[in-house]
Amino acid sequence: MTRDLLEAASDDLTAAAEAAEGDLRERIEGQAETLSKLASADRGPDHGRLARHMNALAEIADQSDGGVREKVESARDKVSEYREGVAGV
Image 1 (spheres, rainbow, N blue to C red):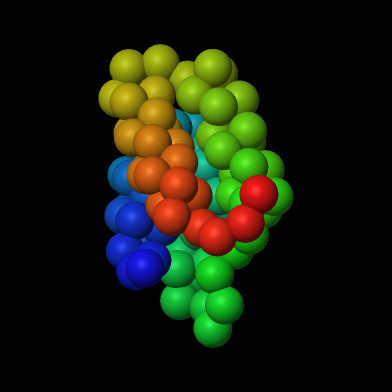
Image 2 (image 1 turned 90 degrees about the horizontal axis):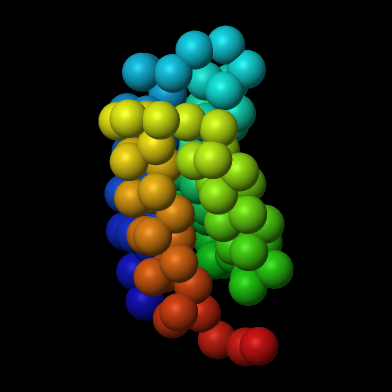
């Protein structure tokens, strides 16, 4: 399984961060950076780690609107799709 979905999610979040402000922008940037690192790590993330990211992205989406919300939701969908292929649980 490729981790292209995680990199694409990171790209969506980077675009969302550019349109966000303040603390929200920092949270989005943090998630983008972490997903980018996970996409290039030697070992992929497990279900628990992905679930935590999905929860954080859901919270961020709830605090967002417009294009920012759309990009965050798109990123969450990509993480969810990636998670479906992770072995375990």
